[in-house]
Image (cartoon, rainbow, N blue to C red):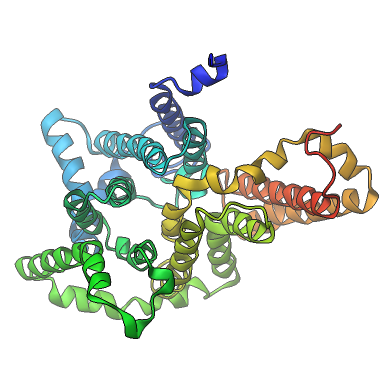
Length: 419
C-alpha cells in the first residue's frame, strides 16, 4: 500500500532532529527576548556572562551542588578547549543537551513501540512542558537538569530493552548528575515481572535477582558519594546542609506570595498530566497496556511532591517535573484520544449552543483571567516572563476539554467529527 504524503513526511528519518532543533531554538529565542528576565539575558538583549559565571562558580563551591560536577565539568571543558566565555559555554552545553533530550524522548517512545507520529507528538509535549519551555527563567533555575534528563532517558531506553550493562552505568551517571534521580527507583520496580501479584512474605529469590540490576546504580552512587565527601572533606558541610533543609519548607509558606508561588509551581508542572490521568480513569474504553506507566507516574508524584515541598524551594518548578519521565515517552499513546477531542471542532457549536456550557465556560475563564493577569502579577509573580499567559492558556484548555468530555460522556452517540 502506497504511503500518503503526510505518512512520508512523518516517517522522514531526519524529522525528529528538525523538530527537536526547532523547539530548542524557539526556547532559546524566548529566553533571549529583550523584555524577558531569564538567566541568559537578565532583561537585556545581551547574554549575561557575569550572572552565568556566578552560577557556574556557585555550583562548584557550595556543598550540595559541588557533588554534582558533571555539568560544570562540561562547561569548563568547553570554555578551556574552545576559549569561549562562560556564558557562551553555559548556553552551548545546556542547549545541546536540551536538543539531545528531545531526541531521546523520541528514541524511548520508539523503543516502547510507538508510531513515528506519536513519538513526534511526545517530543512536542516534552518541549511544551512548563519546566522545559521556561527552563532557564528564574525561579525555575535549571542547571544540571538537561544532562540529568539525557542520562535518565538513556537509562530508561536500556531498561526497556533489558540491556543491564548499559542501564547500570547510565543511571549511575544520572544520579551523579543529580541525586534526585533516585526517586525514580520505586516506580521502576513496578515494571518487574509479576509485581502485581507480589506479596512481601512471598518475595522470592527470583524477584530479588530482578531487583538487583534495577537498584545496582544506588550502590555505585553510594561509593561515589562516600569518596567525594571524603576526598573533598565535605562531611561537615553536608551535615549543615541537611540540617538546614527544613528552612526551605518555612520559606515556601512564609507569606501569601510564597504560598501562591509554591502551589502554582506544583500546578504548572503537573496539573495537565494529572487532569488527563483523571479523565482517562473515567474512560472505560481507555487502553490498559500502559497502566504501569500511569502507576509509575502517580507513585513518583506521591514520593517526590512532599519531599520537594518539605526540603527544597518549591518555586523551582523543575523539581516537581521528575515524575513526568513516566508520561513524556507514552503521552500520545495514553492521551491521544483526549487530545483529539480538542480538535473535534464540529462539537464546539453543539456544546456552546447550550447556554449552561457557554455560561460556565465564560465564568470559569473570567476567574482564570482575573487570577493570571491580576492576582498573580500583583503578588510580584511572573514578571517579565510568559508565566501568566502560559497558566491562562493551560487553564483555558483544561476547561474547554472538560466541557467537551462531559458533553460527549452525557451524549455518547454523538460523533466527534459531527458538524
